[in-house]
Image 1 (cartoon, rainbow, N blue to C red):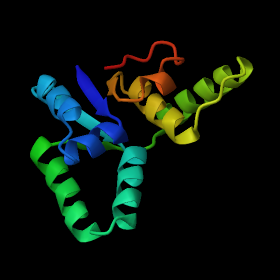
Image 2 (cartoon, rainbow, N blue to C red; image 1 turned 60 degrees about the vertical axis):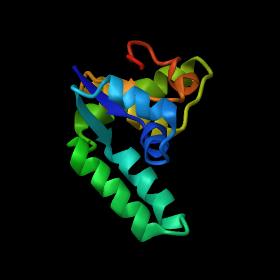
Image 3 (cartoon, rainbow, N blue to C red; image 1 turned 120 degrees about the horizontal axis):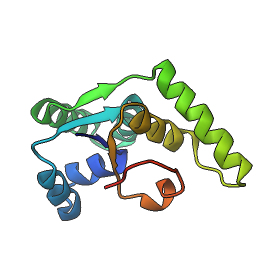
Image 4 (cartoon, one colour; image 1 turned 30 degrees about the vertical axis):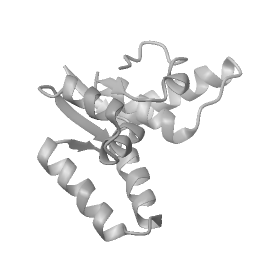
Amino acid sequence: MGYLLDSDIIIDFLKNKESAVSLLQQIGDQQWFISIISWLEILYGIEKSTRPKKRRGEFEKFLSLSQTSILPLEKKVGRQFIRLKVNLEKKGQRLADFDLLIAATALGHQLTLVTGNKKHFNRINHLKLL
């Protein structure tokens, strides 16, 4: 079983927040992934920070040491995204496209999504959350 790490978990881990540190320690022996979307979100935040060079180094070190793989957008993820977006719109529920792409990545690769934003993702059927 693998895990897709949401942006918030990685950010909290890099800030040394206990909840994220203990959660990643709990799943430590499993393979970790991030969506290219999370990678973009994190790098965007880093570039806006007061110390982008330092923060970028910390993020790259995290990816390297944890052997976290970055998953690209693929057709199967795109099809999942469209299915999720249409289904949620039919129910009158909307979710930000980046969050939908992250969820679609987890579903497309049969991964458990590790997130602190369960409220955002609870409405997506068949998505495993941690």
